[in-house]
Image 1: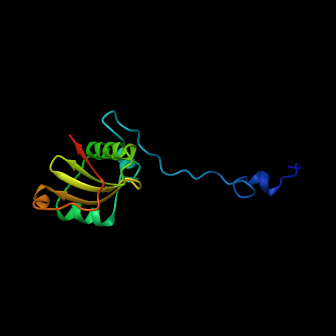
Image 2: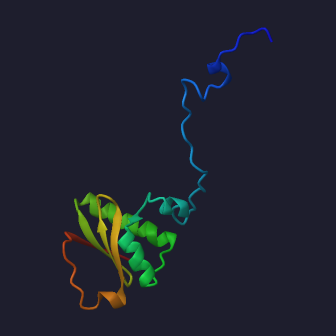
Image 3: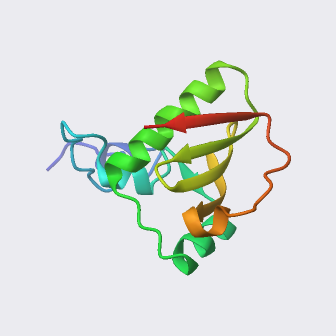
Length: 127
């Protein structure tokens, strides 16, 4: 007990050293696609508040695999230099800001009838 201790030695995380922040543990991605938490965290695609409202109003639910495919479509659009794209996926349509990887709005088949899409520079068909 005669050894001299300094505050930095006793509490290294409080004086002169900042430990990197670690978030909650994320589950590993399955072979079918990305981890659902990654999708929610926006690593693949994000949804604007408006798009979230439209999804809820129209009863559209997307599975992680569908979100992964939507992310792949955004990657293809980005590789071609697209800025704002219309992504047609089954009977759904999404307007996406490619740079921010953000879905701006979403429509189902019934909402697309007689609809004119404006301010887009590309269209991606996803099968």
